Image 1 (tube, rainbow, N blue to C red):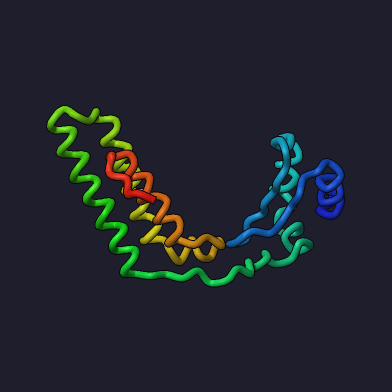
Image 2 (cartoon, rainbow, N blue to C red; image 1 turned 120 degrees about the vertical axis):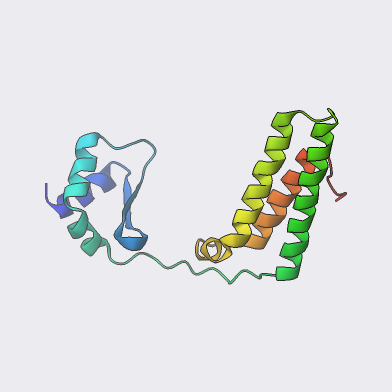
Length: 146
């Protein structure tokens, strides 16, 4: 099958193809395509990318970033970890719950570290941070009133 025939074949089966970042060929479908079709896509990747054109650049408004707010949220999360560790040492919190608090803290830190990447994906890193911080605080039993 040629690249053009592959494209038509995919479209007729509800498989959407698009050019992704870094020269990747992306597909979206309700189910995984058959292995033979994936092999054909891999074989004709460069031709398909040429047909599909460059990846679409998202046109999302720039997300605001407030460093002071982010630092305050991270301070709350770090406080939640300290609280959870004290509760665990006192036998009032199971180790697994402390692990959950630490995991949410790691997620929150990641949103700060990767805020530019999140913005390129169309996400508001500060809103993601707020959500992750809230999850960490709830898991630690230190949720702030809404």
